[in-house]
Image 1 (tube, rainbow, N blue to C red):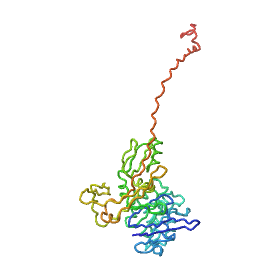
Image 2 (image 1 turned 45 degrees about the vertical axis):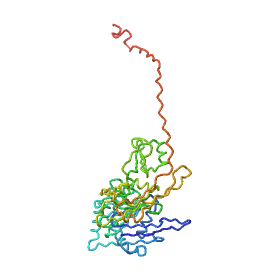
Image 3 (image 1 turned 180 degrees about the horizontal axis):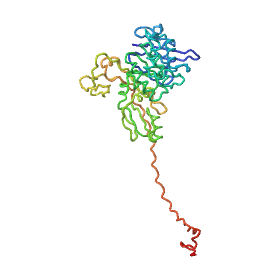
Image 4 (image 1 turned 135 degrees about the horizontal axis):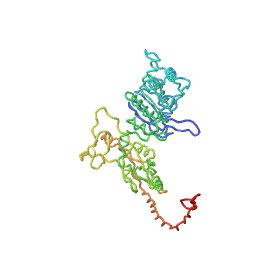
Length: 425
């Protein structure tokens, strides 16, 4: 278990820049996703965890060992793939990997170093390119060479920072399989801004924004939190502008020249536009709703060793979807309702005022470990203005009747002056 407590990193300067604001996380074995936009502090956190950047305050322990105070205890069991990895282009893939293993201090343990290099290249599907120079490698091949050095020495903690950025779909899915295999018996931290990476690979994730952790959840719980609150439909450009001004738009794409818009509504009321209907939420919907401050995801409990009983839902509480376990409805076990948040006055610009979510009490989470673990902010307190009505298209004017154009008779062809039979000679 990797435990991070109140981690702070301040870069000196005028003024100083705080990259991490009291980050606290518990990262168990398996694949853990760290999801956030560019500049959110993900790379700073990864560098602190890897021991290459000193933290301002806080603590990081791996299986009880303080890795901030004694980073040399971490390095022998660490595999690190940074966002930007430097290679010597004139070396072959096998030579570059051998050099990296020497610098890392990885021993062959009774085997020939050449055989160890070959095994690592075979594991990341680079054996056929071992004699090619690194400058001839594609971006995906360089990423696989980087992961080969990261897994050398059988580390128990692997950190990969933005590993799929710039990869084509085929290379990305090949990289997914490599990371999924590595996460079976160790802890792998995947830092990325690509939601698909986390949705495919990670069982648990944290969302970070502005150096602060704003959500700790699972993909299934994040999707279940938005069930019945995501609506999709067509919209004109004028309607899309209206939706962006007064609703949380999570996606707007053009399909066959028509805007298809996805909207998050905390109260489950669809926008007053024709064609909008409830759709299944995605992890991207939850991520964008959290990043824009429209939703708050509470942290579900860590999975216990024993099987967890299905959630008990009262008749007054909406059932919450959980992964692979159908909800059981009963009237005998009411759960305490969370305290309602007090809305602030509406803003003077006509928009809804920001309303902060009320987190679920810890006692309630302990009593119902598998029940709903997501608290959302209440609906907006100010009704958006009515959408300007779309003017009806005017009827086309009647066709104009033009006088017929006289067509002159063409002159006879040469030799036909006296008729079709010629001149009779």
